[in-house]
Structures are given as structure tokens and as C-alpha cells.
Image 1: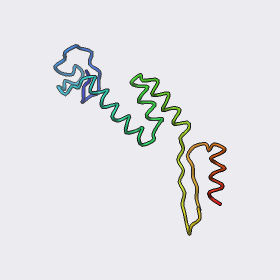
Image 2: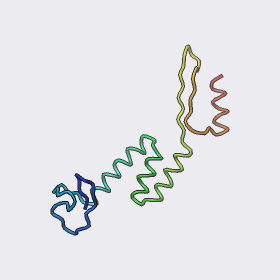
Image 3: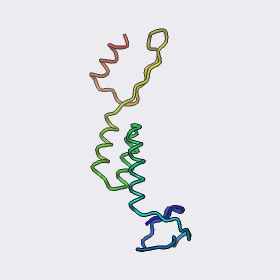
Image 4: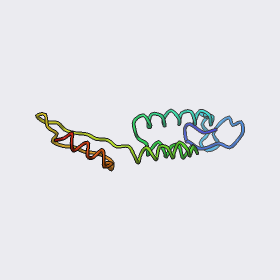
Length: 109
């Protein structure tokens, strides 16, 4: 069990209220995990693999965390500003692999 108000873990088997803050707003561990999974899936869909990996590690889902770390290392984002049919600004947010860099140079010219 976990208190929804103060966020403390409750170790009692059948608590009626939180022993830390006195709140009766308690949630089961199953609800906490299912809510976490929903949040993790949203992060993953948004391409935020590093944050996703950290959340999986907190849930001790190490295989999923490892997969997300690999995705974070290999994913990249490219944005370009096009003016008068020509690329004026090109920004990428990760190391560009050699063949991709060659492709970008050919495309820009």
C-alpha cells in the first residue's frame, strides 16, 4: 500500500489510514505499478528513452531499461529550417553515424 497524499509506503497488511499523515486516501501497489506503466508508455512514445529507462529501473524491469538505454544511444532528432527552397539551419541532437551523415550532405546540396 501507498499513501496517495504523502507518497509514503505503508508496510501494514490491512491499513485503514496512513500512519505517517493520517490520510485515508490509500492506493494499492498494483495501482501504483499500473499507473507507472501508463506514464512510461507515454514517455516511450514521445521518444524520451532516458527517462523511460530510469522509470523501468525503479520498477526493477531491467531488461526493458536496458532496451530503452540502447534506444537513447541510437536515436536522433533532426530539424531543419527551409528558406526559399534551401536548408539554412540543420540541427541534430545525437551523434550522426557515417552513412547517415553522407546521406544528409547529399540531400542538402
